[in-house]
Image 1 (cartoon, rainbow, N blue to C red):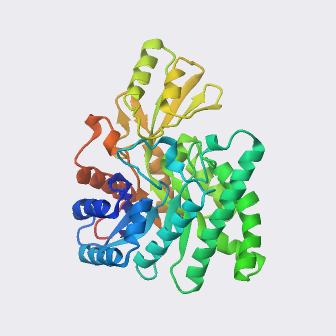
Image 2: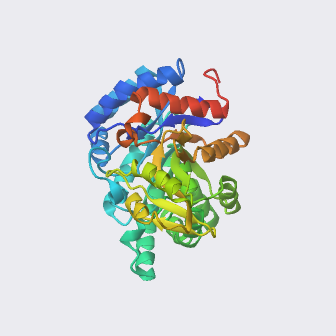
Length: 408
């Protein structure tokens, strides 16, 4: 739905279906229900997630035309897509394979270009579009030495520039403005604001300016503008909260370098202080154990008493270090419902969402807002409701925070 603060939706990665027929069936089941509870009588935006197989099938003319007809019938539109997970995302063990193929691989490039061509065909006239993507690669795949990390970064960056060239050509040819929204996350090759800005200014721009100048015949200044227009940040609130980053400082640093936010992904992580008293600490640790499931990565970043951070690749590694009393707080990459701020002895990082949305309300810094709680299938049973009800509660909570009515 369009609001005074941007287009608001939820990401359909919560709905299974790696084949287009299966995913389309899920959209037809849930989108009308959510729309009725969130935006009755208004056009409703969709944050579409397509697996690689589904994208190949939707690219067929008959399937694309059928989808367009359904969108028109239901008074819906697509303005953003999630291109992070390439393959299976439900009923399989995802873990670190969410990054595969990474940006060093031609399959990732082909997939993202295909998604952009689909998005260009689906976007309403005059509307910009964005696709979120992985932060180049997974750190543990290229951490043997600095030379290997640099080689991964260079290869991934050059591949990403192939996409930028296509986006620039589409836009210059009269097509829509579309941007690739890079999504830092814990243990990604880019995992925080510092790493994102460092990559952007020391790798992407230097390589990209030469590449775009050569490919499009523009000068240095225009080449830099093209890159900044077509490569933006996906601000996943959960991920930045896990890194203990202050929203105001994130935006200030981006602004200093003239970098843009393509999309806010509205999501919350688990967190808790770790008491030093044994029984209280055990109660907190046991509460975290309830969220130790085997499908997704649940990286944990702990804050020590001296303020330094300790990183655990997944929740099991954190649980093994539970007796480490030097660690005073845990934050875990487990997306939890954003309308709940406490889970017995655990809390969520929902306050970070409140702060980000307040900044967006004061001075909008992006046109795209997407709720992304993809863990409904693996949440403890007491936190689950019927899917359409849960999604609607999240969207209506965001509307309340933004002070939006159905008539805005």
